[in-house]
Structure formats: C-alpha cells, structure tokens
Image 1 (cartoon, helix red, strand yellow):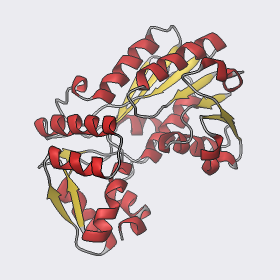
Image 2: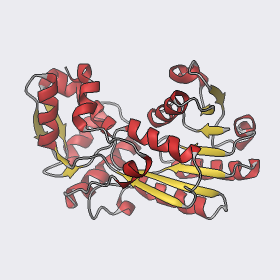
Image 3: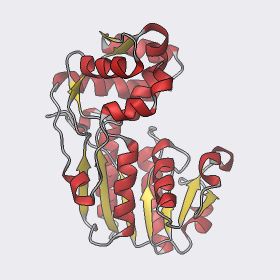
Image 4: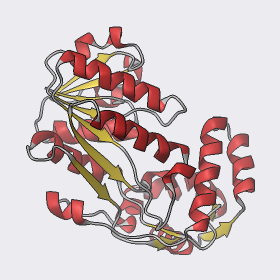
Length: 288
C-alpha cells in the first residue's frame, strides 16, 4: 500500500491522480474529507481522514503501508507536522518515506534565508536520521504559482511581480507527480535526492510574452518592489506568515537573479518536461 499525505492540496492531488491513472492502489490522507471531492471517486483511491500532528489519528491511514509520499501545507508548523508523521510512520512499520521537498533554481540562493526551504532541509535531515529508507523530491518553483496572477492578467493585462530582471525555471506539478509515481513504485531510489526544474529559464517579460501569445491579448510585466507586493498580498487576505516568507524569498531571488535548468531527473524517469507555453495553454481560460 502507498500512502499520500496532504492529498487535498495541489501537489497531493496531482500525485494521487497520477497513481490512480497508472492503476496503482493508493491511500489518500486528508484532514477534512469534505475537501477531498476531487479525488474521492477516482479508481484505486481510498480516502482516509487524520491529522499528521496527532499520531493517534493515523493508525488507520498507516496500517499496511509500505511507502509514503510526505506532503504537508507550507505553514510555520511544517517542520513539526512532518517530523511527527515520520515518527508515526516508523512506529507503524512503514519502510520507505519519500519527502516532497524543494530547491530553488536561482544560482546561489541561500536556503537558510527562506523559511520553507530551510524547513525542508531540516525535515530531510530528520528523515535521514530516522533509519527509514528515504528519498527526497526537490522541485523548483511550480508553474502553478502563476495562476495566482491570472486575475490581474485577465482584468488589466498586467503581470505584477517583485521579480526585477530575474529569471526562473518553473516546473509543472504534473511532471513532479509523474516522477513521484516512478519513485513510489520502483526500487533503487532509496537514499537518493532528485532535483528538478522546468525546461526553460524564463525572465518575467518572457513569461508575460508567452501568456500574451497564447491568450491573444497584450500582457505586460510590471516590476514592483517586494514591499509593494507584500502589501498587495496582505490586502488580498494571504496569511501573514506566508506573506513574510514570500517577501524573504523575493529578496533572496533578487540577490541571485540567474537560474539553472536541470532535467536529469526527468530524463532518468522518462518524463517529458512540460513547457511553460504548454502549461498556459492548458489554463488559457483563467488568463483570458
């Protein structure tokens, strides 16, 4: 049995969808079953409810599990949540934990200066010390983060980001899910850390131009300061802790403006990298 935690979130859903598509039995752990409607009717999927911070609620979820994909929300509690789950998984006899982690594509980016990459590294160390078999999945920025900008593009034709003249190499979550499928269903991945980016290092004007070409209307990039972006995110109702983390991330990216492209993991598992144009085409109506 394979378990996917955080299965109601974007990454968890994508992993569950891919496992189901590949006819693999998977157990999907969610805190609130009412938020699992997108996966509850999929073939080969068993939805279970439990709280990763409360091990006493996980016995049913962990029963008979051999491998688990560890995902949880990006919150200040991420480290405690994931380490608590690792302890529970070990106690339940889980053999192999695949940690859905992360790594910035910006060359020279210091992970200690961004709370989520810092916590990811801390959880990785905790997992490695647990004596469980482990694998780390380390994707770069998700293409899906640009969906947050769709309302501004649809209404004003403006991509407004605190990104100066940096470039980034975003990856499609669906690509990551396909790689997770192979890691979870084949042997030989124990003790490995798989980094991955999208197939292109793109500037923000590049991204605006791609959206413009596919949507069929002018889209321009508007560079704002991290402070301005922070104010807008707070006004939009984003959690203050997340806004603070994104501010720190923007500052670190601006200090290291160039990004790498790393496709060796895609190549190892035979996954065709999704281009940003293909991603926007898939979500065209949101930007139009």
